[in-house]
Length: 96
Image (tube, rainbow, N blue to C red; front, side):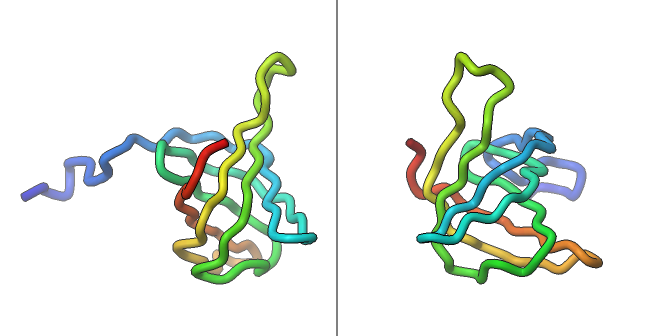
């Protein structure tokens, strides 16, 4: 059993704080990726745009024009209000 001082996640999360584009059909929403792991990301949005269970595509630009953006199909696992912002937790389904 893990105590509260041990990491419970299988994959480490990396703080990113980078612009991310979320795409669902014809809808495009810009947000901020706050952290990233091998299996998902936490995204901050100015409005409540998505619901738990929604599937969408995420596109995270890289800091180099030599590298393509990170893109993945994802599923929304949680939506939390945080003051005037909303935080999404998404799990990657496929990474392209």
